[in-house]
Image 1 (tube, rainbow, N blue to C red):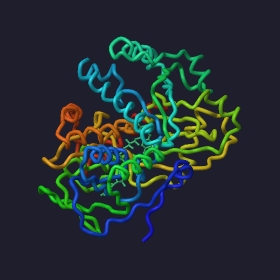
Image 2 (spheres, rainbow, N blue to C red):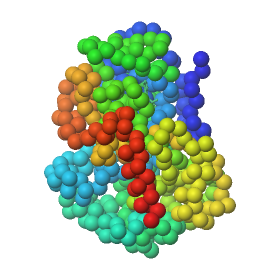
Image 3 (cartoon, rainbow, N blue to C red):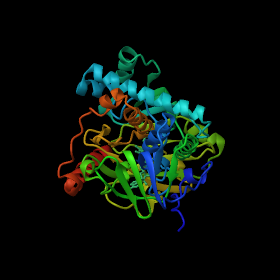
Image 4 (cartoon, protein in one colour):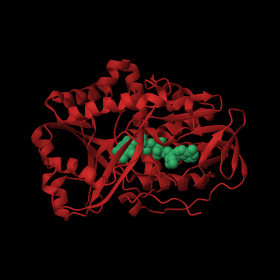
Length: 426
Ligand SMILES: Cc1cc2nc3c(=O)[nH]c(=O)nc-3n(C[C@H](O)[C@H](O)[C@H](O)COP(=O)(O)OP(=O)(O)OC[C@H]3O[C@@H](n4cnc5c(N)ncnc54)[C@H](O)[C@@H]3O)c2cc1C
């Protein structure tokens, strides 16, 4: 049976070094069985193999098939919540710890790209556009806090005119530019991590959906055509978890988010639209995020839904959001349109932990997972290796269960999400 194909995305069309890994068709032993071939699973597998563990990674579809190969590629600084909010919620010391984790996550990606020569178009810079009067002053407050209390002088507040010089839209009232945030081609980064993991000794199997595992030590992990006996399991399925692990499913809500890539723009037109290759996102609840690709397309993410299944015409779904910011692109064709599933937690902070002595998981990065998922994989590997200090801090973030758990989380959440997305428009 042929492996499933990637969605028809700009990333799949420009993938470098795509490789087909075999399906698991036998019974094998390993120290660790990683379930899921996105950033969390790949990073855990690579870091574990480097520590000398014998690792098997099972991916239901293809490497980077989930959110990791479909996202906006924006690598923001800090957590999903900004430092001012983190301080209010957790106090300065803990807020600093989580800031430092996120900085370590950024460093880790830079180092991996360099160490394994991953061709993933890493670029620096990210701009936040403030779209509502209510948020005026927020950028200056955050930049001040970062410089004073986080030793981070790389973010600066922008006036309306300054944002307009960087991004040709009238939608932003002011902004913030973070020179040390980054963007990458996420699928190429995932494919590069997989190659590095294999070189370090990881055995990767694609088209090998895990159907279940025992709660024993060692555990037996079962697919339709094989099984893995392993001392440890790392569960890294995030928005694609489904019913595999009911003990954590109620802590996350899967949501679908959508991206388009325009046809290539004339180089000058592209640079007049956005003055560089940096990423941009805005303060909307359903965030718009965009940037220019290497070949001068606008990659624009905006719009989401909260049910199983994507809109039948994703381009038509996203295009109005793009034109609202950039009416000057009305004549531009959309070449690619795709969606992906991520997971959010109630507090929009990641959820990691240990379900039994030999089962670790991380999920719920709430739209901020490009760097944090990589980091979660790394510190799970540290914990399995016996150094759980960073994992213990990371997994101590409070994570509420969605009211109604997996059965009833949708009606309430969907209403809540629709309410906030409606407020975006007011
Ligand atoms: C459209 C979109 C845009 C986004 N933009 C950004 C952004 O710009 N910046 C940012 O920081 N974050 C962004 N995110 C979020 C980010 O992509 C995710 O947080 C991150 O990729 C999560 O990585 P992961 O490895 O945990 O999960 P995933 O990449 O989703 O990987 C999970 C994998 O597990 C596999 N799997 C599931 N069940 C099984 C099973 N039973 N057996 C075997 N394998 C299984 C799936 O097939 C999948 O490949 C975006 C997400 C989406 C969808």
